[in-house]
Length: 266
Image (cartoon, rainbow, N blue to C red; front, side, top):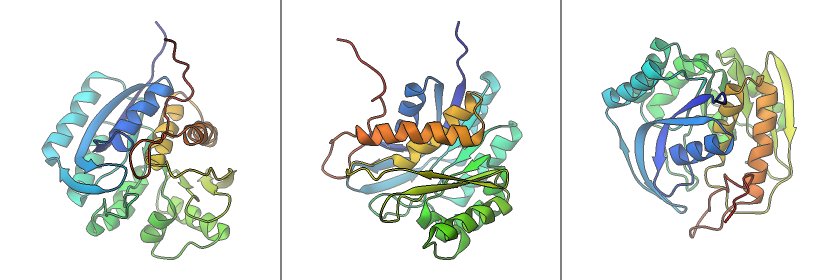
């Protein structure tokens, strides 16, 4: 039997299927790892808006994590949307108690439509306790600005910010540059070295779930044994193809095509 690595996603759900847990599980399947999920919040959203968010009770979240770890060897963990400090504390204390390894955290603060998906009161806890637990921390530019309380306007600003987040305790930090105009460049700080990932801008509005997909792809490749820079390279290649082949589903920002690299037969 082939060796199948198991990867756990801890995040909110997206009933429209483009982001959150649903995007993560699709990504894991496309990249040939065994996907598992712990739901932190039930999000009523579609390609246009977030209607409501219901946070699950912390004890239910803890139980989900514990039962996975008591039974299955978890090769990597992707952490996505966590709305409150209480849930954030529950998740990371439970991961620590289970000796979780290879944690990739995507700090989901805002939805595509601008709706807040993380309470402002949770940001300080994120800085003090979450970032030091992360093997890879993957904020976009607006999230980086909130975490560091300063504007990020240039590539040099991104480089300095990546170093500063690593100083907060992250083993590696990938700052995503897609919010800048022009050709996007992502900046990775890993082992005190800077790696740049330049890519072409793809002319599509269908980018719903991009951050979720990238972070789960990084976790999948780390689970397979890739070092962080190589895992980011492979994840970037995968997500570029998923955006290039994105799906015109819904009336707003449509989803990526997570299975573009799989040939279906009738």
